[in-house]
Length: 525
Image 1 (cartoon, helix red, strand yellow):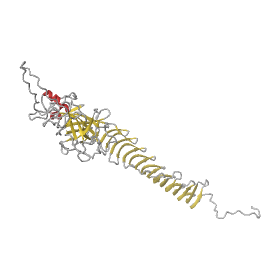
Image 2 (cartoon, rainbow, N blue to C red):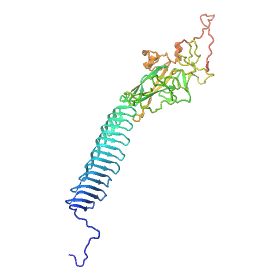
Image 3 (tube, rainbow, N blue to C red):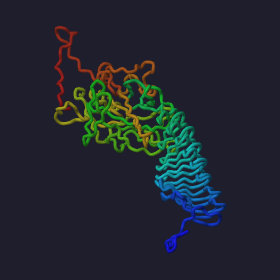
Image 4 (cartoon, helix red, strand yellow):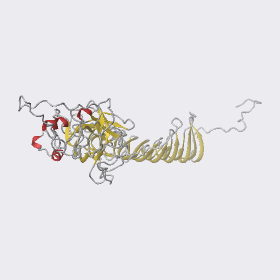
């Protein structure tokens, strides 16, 4: 009992003593003894039951349904440690069932949860805006699903623990489509890629690279191919792998054919020393140890340039890989005459010609082969073929110190050495890689001469039996030398013979030596 006159204890004004026990029923506020939790809401039988809000000392909270003191039912939870927020179904304090989780780093997930983890079907959007809709297991993409990537690509297929694995289809934003096997998130196994350029690869993939992809182009035939002047030419091109096998898994690679003429010719094979080009021209390197000038091709096919027609850009740098317009069966448009699409690693260029020199190309003849112009009787100068052959020498005053003379234009390519080039103009390049150019050394021989190592089509045009041809023969006499040996000029007539000297008195059967004809110098008569 308190002593008499002692002051009585009273609660401070405005302070309310907190209940030492939670409310029994109804609505009430209770602060737990450890002061970390604070609950305000409905009670039943001394337990949180109904709607309420549970606050945590670190700033986290839950607001929603309670059942027998447990967080169960619909509610909203915020975690101060992660910054994530979840709204949806709860079971025993964990997200369980359907709900939506918003992540502090950005993005959200809406779908099924199990014991706080993404499990089942749902939609996940990451901070970059990439979206996955499909199956989940233990918070990871697992099972069948559809993914939209940031760059616009889409993937639909199987996933294993957040990685593409199994069968799937990747549709790229540029129009390319891959369908096949995946392993560890990369293309691996059997699959087909229809590239946006029109190229199709269907075969084995290893670590996202086609295992049987073409790495080079080869023009089939002899090392040096010969064709008759003015005849049509056909070439077979083969795509090969590193081991030399045909890249038969490829279809639709776009190839373009072009040509060049040897800049400085050899007298053994040509009558033209070189071409003087207006503006200087552009010299192109070749793997044969010499340089060449771009040279036009023509085609008698509909839509192709005809022989003698001016080809735009004939004097430009021909091998420049210009972007080609889509063509072929997949594009629904015919390819230009000088383009071909490969089929199972092969392409054939047929029915094309080496036309006459383009405007601005001035052929200069070897002077040691220039004599008199063609005579009416059918004679021909050694340095140039007459009408019915190829060309005649043009008279120029004085001599040329370079030992050459300019020739008149003609309707076909001069005999000599040329280069055929095959370029990979697939655009855009397949997987960012363009095949190196392929070259073929071509020798044009005058009409009536034997053609060695030429395709059957060119041999037939030259009039030479196929059984009499040799492949790769490089010991070919010059056109002028062969005519001297055969005694036949290029136009088919007979070479003019020098007049016989009268018999010597001492020996009637022995002709006297007549005066030697005047030797021609650098000037033309």
